[in-house]
Amino acid sequence: MRHVKLGVNIDHIATLRQARGEKNPDTVEAARVVYSSGGDMVVMHLRQDRRHIQDDDLERVRHDVKGLIHLEMAAIPEMEKIALRVRPDSVCLVPEGPRELTTQGGMKLDAKRPDLEKMIKKLSDAGIEVSIFADPEPQAIRAAHNMGADCIELCTKTFAESWGKKLQAKELEKLQLAGFLVKELKMELHAGHGLDYYNVASVARIEGMDCLNIGFSIVSRGLFVGLKTAVAEMKRLIQ
Ligand code: PXP
Image (cartoon, rainbow, N blue to C red):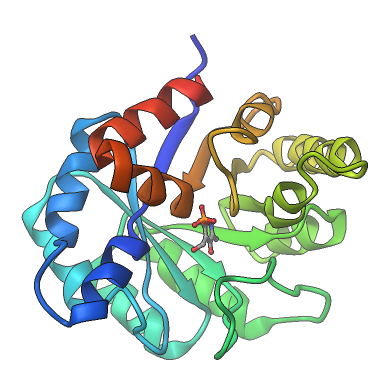
């Protein structure tokens, strides 16, 4: 059986908690459920505006729960410092806009970015695997590779939005071709954004896929069937 790993993003557990500014629902409890129901890693995006995940969530999950932690973060010194202190197992560098509802696409890697290259090296030297969130475009993938990233997370936002539309097959093909290049460059292949219980299977079947990072659909389904069932169902779908 192929093992595609499942990273479960728990940002929106924290969104719900922030709505009342209280302790529940607790991200530590959510992380325990993720690991015990087939999730391979817990994913958190510590945003600059701290709208959902707080520094304390990251610290507590790292400290109180045994399991892999994947941190999504903007490529800025503040986040680099936090990552080097808390030591997630891996990070994904993502673009971040102040008023966006969610991440809008991959990192723009068309210009020379010595700052990014330096950050990737620092994080790697600290034993943290570095992934770059990239649109399925050869130029971005090659640039991330040249900067020393270990992994590419392909942005599936446009594919997810094309679901059921004419462009769906073309968007899937773009992801497949991009995946082929990532593997050719001997990098780890991840994908995520907008994946749900309907569209996930075709992305999971992309040759060489190592891991899918999924949040919103799992947490949403978890409200009705329980987080444990929602994670286990997703895990079954991606095998
Ligand atoms: N991967 C990355 C890089 C993201 O920024 C996000 C959203 O936080 C996800 C995956 C998960 O997306 P979704 O919540 O739509 O499943």
